[in-house]
Amino acid sequence: MDHDNFIGHALDEAQTSIDAGNIAVGSVIVRDGEIIGRGQNRVESEKDVTAHAEVDAIRNACRNAGPAALVGATLYTVCEPCPMCLGAINEAGITCLVLGGQHSKVGITRFGDYCVERMVELTNSDLKLVTGIRENECEEMRRRSS
Amino acid sequence: MDHDNFIGHALDEAQTSIDAGNIAVGSVIVRDGEIIGRGQNRVESEKDVTAHAEVDAIRNACRNAGPAALVGATLYTVCEPCPMCLGAINEAGITCLVLGGQHSKVGITRFGDYCVERMVELTNSDLKLVTGIRENECEEMRRRSS
Image (cartoon, rainbow over all chains, first blue to last red; front, side, top):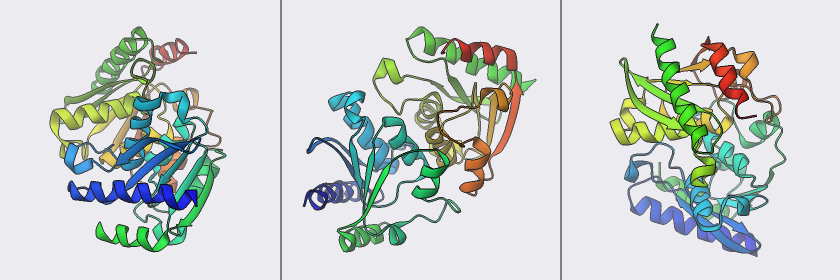
């Protein structure tokens, strides 16, 4: 299935990320069945606190395909995006977010009551959320960053 | 007063931003009384949807001073940051946000019920907020983007 395939590419990016000394997060952006952007966490390797995998993938897609191509696209990522990344996803006009793993298990805890659904509601976004894709592999990848 | 001075630098960045064909937003980051980062909106000129002034300033400060220098720093910006930018501000460890203009007048409306205070509450952040600095000039600058 397509979701499995594209989360596999996000897992590949996460592996490259951890190999470069960063936390194990990777993302890809898909439009019309084609990957138009790939992103890794580069916070440590590039000393840039904004270089999360989702932001990196969005910037990569902007360079590859232009900003207009992101409107209506789907972003695949291995775990729950932080508030900055979710803001960037909305800013780009991405309309579907696919998470590896079950949302309840990959949620982040350093931001109080934040979760994707609460911020989607607060910002009146119509982002579609899909979770539970290749859950075990994504959970295993997440543990490697701990 | 210091706040007036640093918002003046943010206004200068906003002017440069609009001169380059972008919306009129500018930001500076201050640590121990010195500017360590400057940012402009570069969304149109660089075809990068993540290149808002606040994110641009954070990246610039990371390059200039290193990520550790942002922890405890103050970010000055001419109007209310969007969710992505506020997330980046928190991600950087910035602890004080100074807005030009009164918050109620410079608030953004394209994100439903979002405002800085609500997202600070949702994410359990302790960001300090200061508003109303050089209000008339910031409001005039904002109107130039409309």
